[in-house]
Length: 234
Length: 292
Image 1 (tube, chains in turn purple, cyan):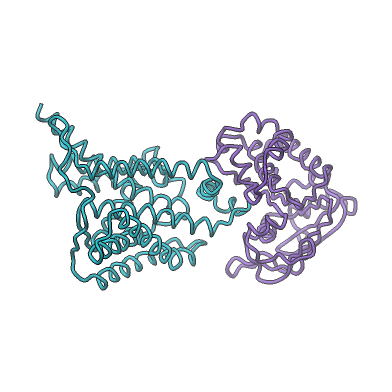
Image 2 (cartoon, helix red, strand yellow):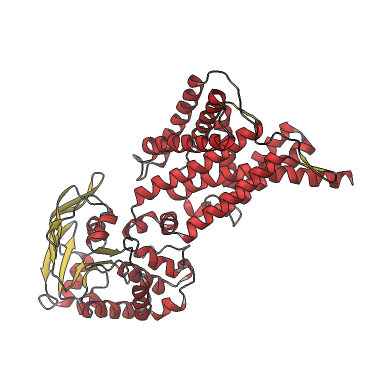
């Protein structure tokens, strides 16, 4: 469904991605693990069109999408739930959801109801400003906002970041539910233990390169976790 | 009693004056809120609009409504020129580069006005020919009243656009977080352009109203408008639209009272002193801290 080949992205002279290649199969949860600074967020932002790659290709559903602006990527059917959620703080919960469906011109009512059914707490707070929500609620809103564009591929960058353990459980329950309902999910996570429980496939990334690819059973979990946090060279 | 009468009269004058400042402040704030950039060429662009209207008035005695249309249209064209040249190329980072570029265009637009119409001062038709309204002991200029009405209408229209349309939803999303807006599927560069056009149109209307109530245009209108717009925005808390309206009115009131009680020299001094105090103390309603 998504296939990334030899992708390189740089911030000025600093190369954050040094030739990344990976695939995400349709209908799967694929997880990207790795220590801080490995380039995971850079990869997400490059796929989503926020950063322009220096070279390489990103193919989605058989067509090249690298270098397209973010709104064109959304139109193709990819939505990113960004790191730190980035909800629109001065807008209401409902308006945040409406903004997520900006590309669509049809009736949003059914989709809003579907998001509210999945996250009942958002419904209670529909008229509240998003900036007043708790971290967990903002994460749910960010997921709901991304779902409003009816993506074929959902990218999630560190959805559990800074959340309490109970809320993290809830987020991962949501991820599993979305997958059961047919979504394809490409997930970046620091919480390797939780991520390996839901993923069918995972990649390890270190210093701008993919260093390991496998199924959750293919490498002992403590070994994955060690390499995800510390890198393989240490 | 005389003091009270003075206070009331000054307040009436101040609100009238503040209405045009409020319009300038709204235009300036829209651009600042969306792009996070100070557009120093904002005043000169609307000055060019007022010049185009003055030229049309001198050349074929066009009516006031036509002149307003010309001022708005020419301001939009000048604003689009500024946006393409200063702000579109410097979208990511480089806030200082964009501001300096807008300073260069300020100089350039002023030169264009002076080359096209080389006399320092051109007459502009009055908004209203008759005398002022007298309400008891107080006097209100009709053109000031019309400016106030226009400002109220613009605020209402802008509110409706921002809170009742799909375009407004996108604008508010971009103001809140332009990266997240792009990720939500909003064409952010297009919103930048449209907001610039909207702000320029409001600026053009303000330029027309100011020129028509002063009954003249000079190249100084450019710098004057940038300054008043920026002051209104800063007094109103940097980036809030209702704040810009209040800031504009406050600026008008302060100027009117200071002019009467302290004289014209101390008037501007007092305004800048107040601005300095606000920026130094950063009271809680100033949102500037959040925007960096």
